[in-house]
Image: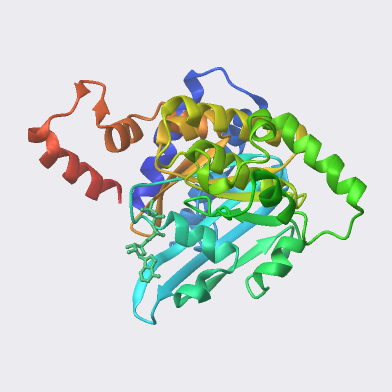
Length: 331
Ligand SMILES: Nc1ncnc2c1ncn2[C@@H]1O[C@H](COP(=O)(O)OP(=O)(O)OP(=O)(O)O)[C@@H](O)[C@H]1O
């Protein structure tokens, strides 16, 4: 509770200093509303706010933007004993890009797999909480059903079919759709408009294409299923910075022109925040920070904890003691 109240103060101050978009103004209004609501809660009922209201952004996403995906206080356990997610709540507004950030092992991939119901293959289980897509519970659906509803995951490591050509990989994405071949060809050409590089390599065996081309193939294949939401896991993994930029540009373009919402798990905090609308930071299976992407990108704590840079410059080894103490305080 202490962290939340401090967090509100910090976010509100920063926001008051900066010019911004309507989304951020909406965010600001909601933070004020929520702050007043908190104050009232504490006057009348000293009990903590219900866990469902995980923070200010959760409220805006839910109340003012039209939420596509709503994850509500989920807990995930692997092998019946390994508790990995400890009450994660987040929301993806329709038509937005939301970044899910955090270091190795924070629980980003687990969150995405919990949404797309892929955990059972790894002896994982959602033991608490709920997941809603467009207002309906989806936590008990099969992965296939979820794909039919328009939610597709692009797994970490791309997972292209190495022995198939780029074009054959793309065509597998349309497998779940009941449409004519003519329509499929039309969609394929549309994908090639976004990914001209894939058109050039369409006859090449995927296993022999570059990491960036495989990532493009994986995203293009997901697009062939005509999704309304893509869960994109670590698109930057193992790619050169220039290729990462190229891929994020295409993601932004798909988001704008095709109105596909993205939940993007990334370790590359700064690139992700540059392209996302909102962000959540996960640590040890908990959301420790959330907010508009521009706010997070300029947040001193984010710079310090995830880039090793603070107002006083890059941190050295001796600063680590202070760093750990601050981190514990924030958590
Ligand atoms: N199948 C599994 N069985 C047991 N533990 C697992 C399993 N998969 C993941 N974990 C554990 O869950 C924690 C979160 O892993 P997860 O892959 O979700 O993190 P992440 O944030 O995506 O990290 P990375 O960026 O390295 O993929 C880690 O401690 C990991 O060891």
